[in-house]
Length: 311
Picture 1 (cartoon, rainbow, N blue to C red):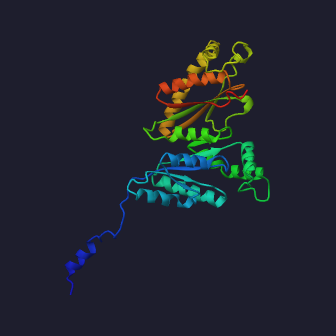
Picture 2 (tube, rainbow, N blue to C red):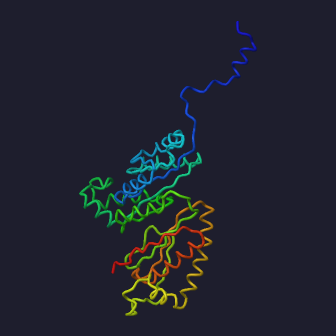
Picture 3 (tube, rainbow, N blue to C red):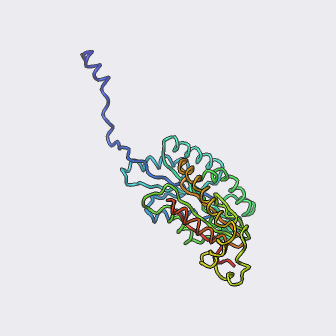
């Protein structure tokens, strides 16, 4: 018979690890690509795939934590995962929220990229490919767009990066994704400084909007009209106007305060929109100078002139 001592030893001895058990490696970096249907999710995903990310398209949201666990078991072979989530109903949306909560509880670093576009741009894209919107049902394309926009409103507000593709072609969208996700030392904060014209509408992906229309318009100076704000002639004219330099100085100081807060809160992307009437002169000149200030302060900065050349 088994002695009492032997019995106690067996009860306190830990069982050996199961055969084939895998060690947990480092948690992979995760990016979730979502947003409006027709706004360019597939293009964004292909760009990340070209940059070496492991991309999974149309993965059910409930399986995202499982995918991250599998990546951690790959012993570093899957270090970066991008998941394209096509939220087509309330149940899918609720599953996505639960998955994000689960990832946060596990301490997984994840970013949400939300692709946006105007109603007009989305309608034109669906009509050009002669396909219905996935949520329009028996209604019109605009009905499906409205339903999806309402469904995704909260997710858009929580996104780390919002990209408006209304006026972007495929190559321009890829350039934006490359600028945000190209490998290398990750900066603490990336800023996009975008000039725009109010007559073409506000940029929907802007975090901050400032107005340069308080400055005299070079458009009404015949010798300056053909030039843009990137020229020394126009920039000199703009910054010789009362209040121009003071505005730049004080707004740059405000952005220093905001940038410090963003870093503390872990926000890594910010879009600053600078507007004038046509997006050709004043906003362009101010954007160029503002971007230089931010770059000098250690903020990785990209300048985009949305409406320059549209006239």
